[in-house]
Figure 1 (cartoon, rainbow, N blue to C red):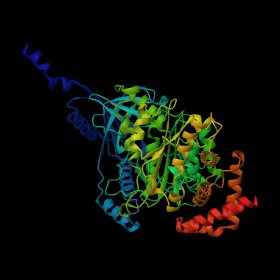
Figure 2: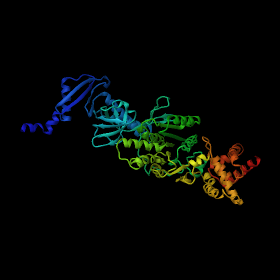
Figure 3: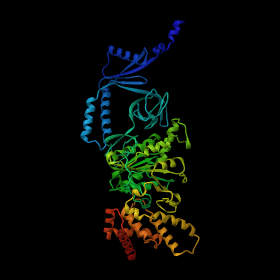
Figure 4: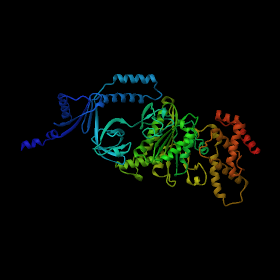
Length: 597
């Protein structure tokens, strides 16, 4: 009786537990070495029942690898070379911004290599319990961190998104067809990151930074984590330098500054992407790098956009990150973070960057799909509770840095699609509260021919005049009030035929302004052209023209200024100011051109 009781103690049960291990070697071990390995396993797993299978593997160069169900012990030369490579990559990526000289990086690298000690790498190995829809549940990895990269035996990478008591949930960066139940998974100890560098300019890459434009491999000059802390308050500088879009209605009424986050919001097919494209095209020769992140769009749409940018010469300073609708949800989820990592590389070099997220509605939908598959509890509109944090931690990384912190900036233009103009839905209200203003595009205006279809009442820039040149601020002074009065008056006077001269003049002025704010695609105006147009409009140069003639008259007038009044344009571009003499000269030149016509 006592003997049976002794055999059922926990110690005796663990001693009887079978441990299966696999030993990969280059040179076959002798009996003494095998005995020592079995002793090590017996001590590590508290079991005397050890089964060891031997396999030859010449790729290890020397040494050996010992694998069990949940652990991997790497004593190979191949593993140690990988360790040294990781140390070098880590040092270079951590010190690749403008604050470190080449000599400084070499010095840090030399000291790290001198202190580097080859050690037996102890890897934690897990087994796939369930896989499907781009999600895998893994058993056996007990110490993984949120956001850590794991490597499947088929070569696919995944990122830890859920840490539970007895398993972890991983999103796959690739198709799940090669991952099966029982597949082995190894911890890497690294957070998700992307290769960065100047060589990315002019290229189209996927969410992992791999080129998809058929122009060969990209030689990265550094490595940045896709999730990174936003710059601190101390490192930020107030927004004061304009980021001109070339769109008259935006630059005059809702100016965007370098380092600002301005939301573009509206229903589908109202011209949201067109505004972003015009803004990118307008950055030519303005010392600005552009990053366009396409999330959940058709591949044909992205190809068309890239072709447009290439024709206008904008691809020379633009990087396109593409996560199409056919890509798995995890790749759509990390795409904007990867784009921001590339933008940060340039920002910390002291450069100005414009990044477009097109669009964050689809990004939130991709994250919702991942969260529901990971069995997280759904909340409002089935989105998880942390969906606000999803976008806030992304957009907070856009800022203007102080010279001490690098001096660059990231200007963000996130795009949100509304349903039937509902700006009070969950995702729109979230992003409105994170950004520094919004440009609201209205379907009714779009179908009425007002393009860009900017709603003057609901659009706002919280940076405002701080991001405008003095010339633009003075020229655009009363345009919003004039448009508001025109719309109000138009409603009351459409049924009345008996109008006084003052009302008729105001209506004609408002009608001309509305026509001047219409702008064709891919034809941005520079600052001088915008100021001349506004000054002429405020002087009622366009008011007595037929509506159909206004746009043609403006183009011919601007052409006349470029040919015959170059001194006015030069003064505007150099002083960025609009004094009374300059304003008078613009009005006189415009009136003289009109009289000639």
